[in-house]
Amino acid sequence: MEQAIHPNISVDCVIFGYDFEKLNVLLVERTLLDESSGKVVFSDLTLAGNHVFVNEDLKDAAHRILFDLTGIKDLYLEQLGAFGDPERLSGHNDQLWLNYLGYKPEDRVITVGFYALLNCEQVKIVLKDRTVKWYPLTEIGQLAYDHNRILEAALHDLRIKIRTAHLAFELLPEKFTLSQLQKLMEVVLGKTLDKRNFRKRLLKLKSLVQLDEKQKGVAHKPGYLYAFSKEKYDLYDDQDTFSVIM
Image 1 (cartoon, helix red, strand yellow):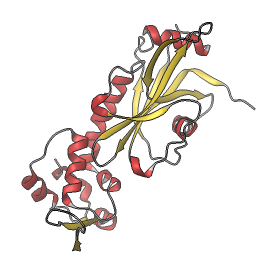
Image 2 (cartoon, rainbow, N blue to C red; image 1 turned 180 degrees about the horizontal axis):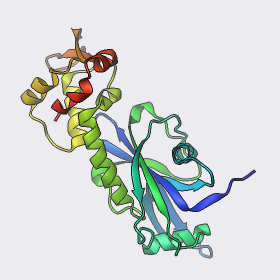
Image 3 (cartoon, one colour; image 1 turned 90 degrees about the horizontal axis):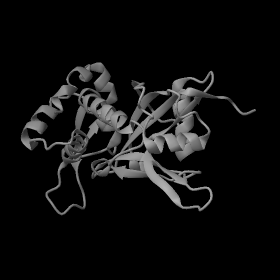
């Protein structure tokens, strides 16, 4: 039995992907074709989102929509907040798209934002009825609806969270170098970190364990490998000292 869609509530997901070089965002292509000529009326990009079902939990809706668009499931999502500007759907293309989908363009829709950060290499995108691809954060232009605002809010929150939690370590290999960790932090924070100061502060973390082994097969001087200890993180309450990662 097909479930009824709530016309005034939606969810939008900002999915950040780290590929060990840059920060990417998962975006969905939105293309409207002229019904008579088949020509493209417009084509742009949106976040992964849609309306929720009546009586559906918001986070369940976010997981469902992500799975329907990409095949990604069991992804940990942070709830970002609600976005309800009365003009958020008033763009010309947005009005045309809503009319095409059979919604009332004049209706107000409140969306709840979610975001996640994951390793691009560990996720396989399964394309369904829409084109969904990774786009470098630095190359993203104007998105549909108010999705630039949602993206900016998610990035701001991510940059706070990655300083105060063990999120960064979950994106790295089980064994990693301090250079790899610094690169990740620089990519997410969008700025260059002083190497000496960063390492000095980083080594204060009790949950960062230096291993008795070094890199192999590298052209430069091999660096020591490290591992993250979740047990020590919980035992020593390292979440209060993760602000050293600046």
